[in-house]
Image 1 (tube, rainbow, N blue to C red):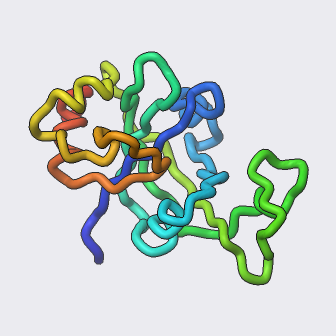
Image 2: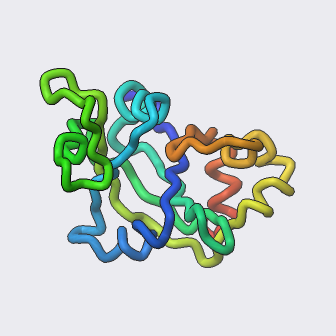
Amino acid sequence: MAERRYWLFKSEPSAFSYTDLQGEPDQTAEWDGVRNYQARNFMRDDMQLGDGVLFYHSNAKPLAVIGTATIVSGAYLDPTAFDPSEKYYDAKSNPDSPAWLMIDIKADKEFTRPVTLAEIKDNPRLKDMYVARRGMRLSIQPVTKEEWDEVLSLGGID
C-alpha cells in the first residue's frame, strides 16, 4: 500500500463550508468544479483513497483551516463541465476526452479552534506551506506529514 499523502483543499464557506460537508449524507461530498490543470493533475495522478485533507476556508474572516477530511474515492469525471446550467460549465470540455475530474471526501474532525493563515505564516514549522506563499491561489495543495501534524496540533487534534 502506498504511503498516505496530505492535502489542503480551499473552499469559500459561502459556497461550501466544513459545516456543509458535515451535513451531507454520511458526511461525504463530491469535490467538483476544479478548473485548474495543476490541481486536476494532483487529483488524477497523486491522490489516493485514505489521503488526509485539511479543509481551509478561503475568502473568509479569518482565513483558516477548520477541520480534516479523508479522500474516499479515486478521481472521476466531473459532469458539471458538460452542463450549461452549472456554474463550472466548460464549453470546450469534451466527454470523450474529459479535462475535468472530481473526487469524494468525507468529514473527519472539526478543529477545536481554527488555525488561521496568520498563525501558519508566523509558525517556523509551517513557513514553507503552499498556502503561506505569496500569490498561491491553487484550490488543492500538497501538505507534508510534518505540516499536517503541526496544523492538527494547533487545531487541538492529536
